[in-house]
View 1 (cartoon, rainbow, N blue to C red):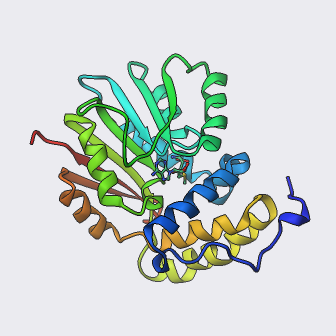
View 2: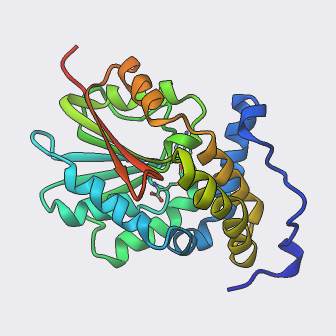
Length: 257
Ligand SMILES: C[S@@+](CC[C@H](N)C(=O)[O-])C[C@H]1O[C@@H](n2cnc3c(N)ncnc32)[C@H](O)[C@@H]1O
């Protein structure tokens, strides 16, 4: 499971802090990072989150409601974990997953096939900012750990709302730095020291995990993100705080215009 030494460059960080770069550079970094990490993406997700990522997706999927189109869109689906969990939990639905990185979709397609879900889940290469679907196509839109990687969050939120049927809801899972003692005492040291060490051992691109830490620490606090959702046109917002607040599930409903 250990990389060849030629990949190990722990002291050179090709990914500057997200606060100091423009949108195009940020998107370029995201594209490069998710092209280079798919091979061990699932393994590292489970290890670094102590399998909490599985529980967080499950929590989101349990809250999804289907009432008309019986279709779910999973935006930034990556290796399709949310799509697969939703298809298992809701046997009546069809799921479409989109991601703009082909290399992330490849293991996702294999997982869908291995689980016998190819007839119910389709995965497409597409950009969250230009979803290739007509208005009002889905009862539910989900995005797990994707929104912080999209610099123009408002445009992404509006696009997700556009493809929802009136009455449908968006389900957004995202990590954020919890406030106070837990952040200073446990979360920040874990993110800044333990996580990069594990990534150096197992990832082909350990610097990518520094970007992931940076993007979590700079994601807006929950109140600010809920405000952004309201500005994007969502109503009846809910926030569920998971695992001591390190992850949140945000739900917002698209009511009739
Ligand atoms: C941290 S991964 C999350 C993957 C998956 N949803 C999960 O739960 O593990 C973030 C994903 O967002 C995708 N992504 C980032 N920006 C995107 C965009 N503008 N359009 C589509 N996918 C995007 C990346 O390619 C990557 O697969």
